[in-house]
Length: 220
Image 1 (spheres, rainbow, N blue to C red):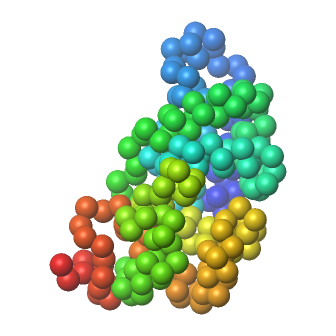
Image 2: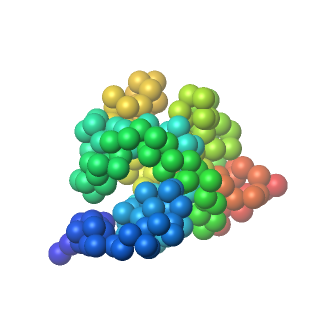
């Protein structure tokens, strides 16, 4: 039986086949950024908030330089994902200016206000891990740094973060700082769960979570 992620990928490939028949008039009515984003909607959704189950990431509000770098990495094959490689192989992304336009468009969108979270247990552990491993590059608020190409991870979906922690340590070790991948590789699964859950909650308006309470409300 296909997983939800596999089904979304199948829908994506169907959409790619349909795109060439979109009328010129319709394409002309769209901004350059939204037109370039059109092939991505089937997986990342119209507002670029990712899939409802949190397996496909929120792209809205992401750091623009990071987005441009990742698009180039998918295109070159340095980062592997079948759907993303189909998208980035399109001739429109041969032009680096279009990559920049698409990255600018996505970075200007409002991030998903209700990302998928984890269980809410042991968030103090997640906060401690985040402070020790992630904050130096991604910032205390998790919003990333444009100058050093560090992505925004605050408020990203928990399921996607959990998978990326594994992939940053293994599959994408050449794309991430060695000190980060080394730290992630040495973490236990429970620690990875708590770190991903904490990060998924960082975009909320309340102060940083520092409680082990299940509801994650913390003592403020």
